[in-house]
Image 1 (tube, rainbow, N blue to C red):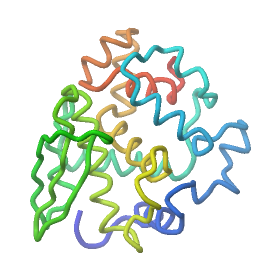
Image 2 (image 1 turned 90 degrees about the vertical axis):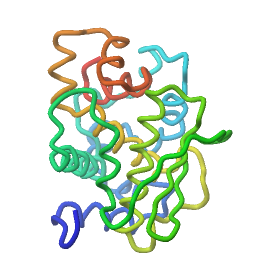
Image 3 (image 1 turned 90 degrees about the horizontal axis):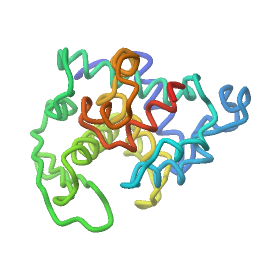
Length: 228
């Protein structure tokens, strides 16, 4: 996606640039928050912990109250971004190939390395004309896929925001990290495919297997879409 970008994408990066990285830049006038009295930003720490929970159950999502609603405007734009990359990659079947990460910066190559990370599931480095994405070596394949697409959002934001994807350190649960998680979820679990498969499957474990994602990520996606 080089050259001019769509107006909606320019709007997304404008919102991200205008924020402090810790909180939603639209929090004070978010219509979704005002309508349902529940805010993703105000629950970001809990959502982050849920995604990292290996003993996840559907009941862990009960605190999410916006059932059946789309999330706020920034999240809607992130979902449009994810769908645009699925279209660009001509993805037509499941599971979504993690190789889509190679499309996020067509000026640089992307190398994935498995390393013994301790505090995080993934990290990125830019060296010369190459991106290095480090993934935690002992994570499951599904978690590595989710982490990989999470880091892909950071690569996109590196070039699209000014100043460069601001955030105050690597604090778990920061708003920018939440956006990266949502991007990964929307790419790996496209809304249309999730609705279609859930109608026939109705089983969280099986859905996670079909989409090759962590159970916690699938559970959160289903809850945010109002399907559970």
